[in-house]
Image (cartoon, rainbow, N blue to C red; front, side):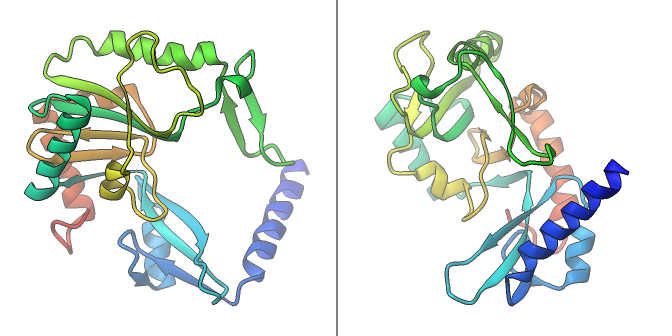
Amino acid sequence: MKHKILYILLCVISFNTHGQYKNIEYLDTDKQRINFEEFSKKKNLEGIKVKLYVADNGNNILYKKLTFTKCFGTLNPTEKEQLNKYFYSRYQIDTTKTWLIHYVDSLPSPEKMPEKSGIVYTDSTKTKHKHLYSFKDYHSSFKTEKKRFKKYKECSLLHFYINDNDYPMDIDNIHWCKDEHRMLKSLFFKEIDYYSTIIIHPNGEYYLSKYSHRSEDRLLRFKIFRKEKERWDKKFLKKERGTT
């Protein structure tokens, strides 16, 4: 009975959310409009997620956009050269190495972090939640990763952010870098897409993921990376080769 009530509530919420808009439009991963049938087929593919947003153009249209939770691509030579110059001139980052980048818009403010880590539900039905971390646990994750990363001699582990919110940058030699000109964001993040993990190989080929998984470390090895990229290309880029 509880499951039926929850289902009805979710349907009512969905109806109210969609009912306030004149039209609903469906967008592919490249923001091209597609019909509902094609949208329905693609949204259930592994590695695809649906993002809802309303463009601020006064048309009162709800957009449902397909977005990749992870994807591969290649920077063109000019983009890679600019990125190399930016990384080296500002942070003396070795441009001959593979980069594993963790990216966040805003670091948490230590003053606002809880004393203990835990889970907080974000809706009354307790179907959605978020994790809250204490400063100790949050910072320990960086130290643990740094220790694990030492075995990758040909790679650099980097942490990019836009706002530091007074997060301490001078402890444990964590390699923090501010994306001051938002170069990484402009290169890799679409208007509504956000990726927390970026792997860039010296030849400009890259991998993006919304989440950080330890299993992604294997993509630092170029042979494995290339096989995974070719597999992804065949699955998602059949019609438009070179599209990222």
